[in-house]
Amino acid sequence: MPRPVVHPLRTPSGHLLTGARPADHPWHHGLGLGLPDVDGVNLWGGPSYVHPEGYLEARTRRGSVRAAGTGADAHEDLTWCDDEGAPLLRERRTVACTASGSGLSLRWRSVLTAARDLRLASPEANGRGGAGYGGLFWRLPAGLGADDLEVRCPHGVGEDLANGCTGAWLEIEHRGRWQARLEPDGDGTGPWFVRVSDYAGVGVSLAAPRARWLAAGESVECALALDVSEV
Image (cartoon, rainbow, N blue to C red; front, side, top):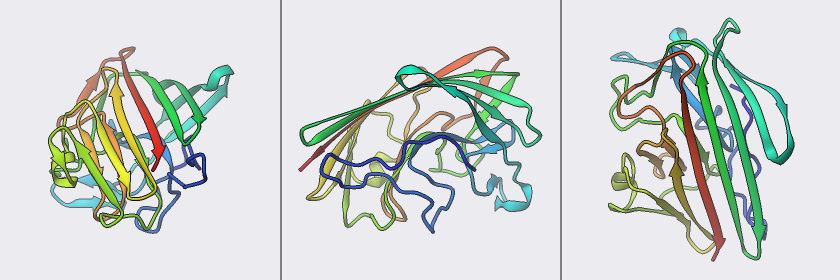
């Protein structure tokens, strides 16, 4: 599902940090904001999870995210729509990225406002344990995995401890190349979603482990600070 994302993102010396449409998950693209279940509409990409059957293409309703225009200082207004084009969420987004020396800093802040009463959910909220994706998500390049990456959180080291962790930070290191620290902010901050074994991607969950309800006109803020330094 096309939506505005940050890609390609590179370190100052050229190491690629983001992946685009990898074979394992062709709907993954760069660093961006997406939700797999907005009142039953898929605004993430790929098939939707239906409990207890699993991922079902035939039961997937795909929406779209439309940009209304970009202003100064990387401000962007977007509308999240259902499969018939009706607005579900309106987003005000600000993204800033600076590079200096051997590092870069990216700051992302989005405010999502419900166009009507909505239920926001992840596969975990819908019954699939450990699958709390949905929110701000960073897909790393294809080919990276547990042999290349180390992930750390306040609970310890490794995917098993980091996935679902509610700590205030997450660190991921591509051994011998770069290390990154992520810190979430905003009232839309939930547990971390982490994968480094099957594929490499990390994110901040917006609707996990439980669904989130928004009344019409109610807003939720998602924000992330990402700092990367070369090693």
